[in-house]
Image (cartoon, rainbow, N blue to C red; front, top):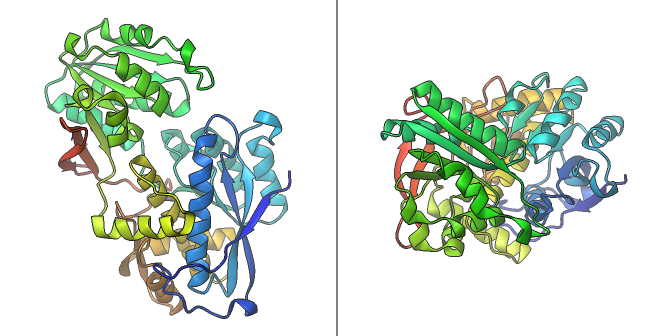
Length: 418
């Protein structure tokens, strides 16, 4: 499969501060962008494609990396569907063609399959959103990293909060795919470790191409029949709307918690604010509004599209991932997977000058080029990589209000509250 290649033009200077070396004198440095272009999660592709291009543009406006423009060769990670190469073939192709740094894969299944190949061949792999806990223990020789706060910790925090609030029985209702299965298992096992009891762990399938075949009431009956104190729902947007619209809230007075991707006002707008009032959600601590606006406004100017809700967090993750990869290569001094891997920990964990990279990339790059020490921070979390390529973070405990918005009740401290 031949990759799609895009070279990013110079268009804006809001974050990059512009004024880099003359582009005519620069070469090209090729990285891989492994994205879900086709298949079940192809809905992620438009934002993924635009956000990677936006991030690369910022880097190139700031002078590029090692005197070169950053160029992304795009590969589809859809794992053998629709005639696309299986992800293992994609990974081996990248090894064969010498690509040292990979952004992606995005999805947990494909990231877990690609990570051992990256590790065995000393290629730095940073996945923007893969949330499976299993990625932390895969045999990757310390070459697979996340660009997003470890998403599975939201299930841990949700379970701990529910038990501490008095819940003693718990059930899970989730879409039957790797992340949904794992998030539910993590929620229930954490709840049990606290002393609670699991009643039901129910997985369902949902055909997004034929949603009329989905029996939402049957799925709800499977968990509500046990009358648990708390239910954890992990779903995609369309099936979540079907389930929650069907749910008769008056029949149950327990605590409903939705998975990290569902904690958005858009869900309440689709389901109804009254129905969502009192439902809990756990996720990243909200970014500083002023800093967040800088990133969102710049992306809108670049792409012509506005991001809201969960897509804002997705944009943050992509921007962080691409910027950290670029800084790691610059810090390494050459385009080499092992040296970039080692440099990634240096620029993320510090010690050094703390810079919120998503809004101050040019400053971060200046520090690295000048031989200084950098401590790169994300918009929503400190990025301090552990031995598994994860960066554990604090959680925001939020609850939908009567207007369909989310109130932040508290920030849960990692290692203390969960």
